[in-house]
Picture: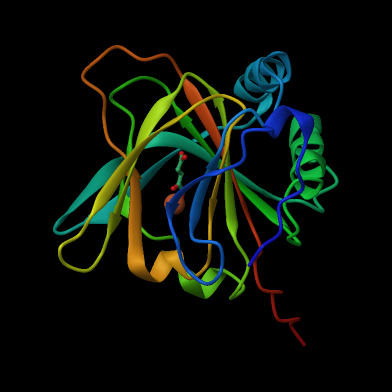
Length: 200
Ligand SMILES: O=C(O)CCC(=O)C(=O)O
Ligand SMILES: [Fe+2]
């Protein structure tokens, strides 16, 4: 079970959405002060080289409905807010995060379909931490097995959603499109990737 450090901003403790032997899925609001979350949002929105991707789906190629970017945390060109975010996170969650994936949801048309994160690119036993910046968006987390219970959680700026490695086997997560007008949101997905084998 991954240990959380208690901070004064985070006095309420996490909201446990689903349980398992590795910490399950936990929502931790208020990990970042709102002013910092706002500064990082603005800086990342402007400075990151956001990519529009296309992806095969059945017999078509479709636009990925959000912009994305990614860094290894040892990248010498890591944007400053990402270095600061990973330092903050390390003080909060005991895990050797080495990569960060970024998502920019420009408005309510942007989304991520229900999925689990790819297990082959994650180190077993290590969590995924989703740090939210900008406008809140609602995430749906649904069990893969009948009766498929679902929980919805509003991911607020400055919050961290922790998902255990094991939870990726048993639950899907996604951000549905929103019919209500919503502002832009950035999520930072911190992960522990396995080492890339050296080429000889
Ligand atoms: O934006 C989020 O909070 C979720 C992102 C996500 O699930 C992913 O990048 O794999
Ligand atoms: Fe994901």
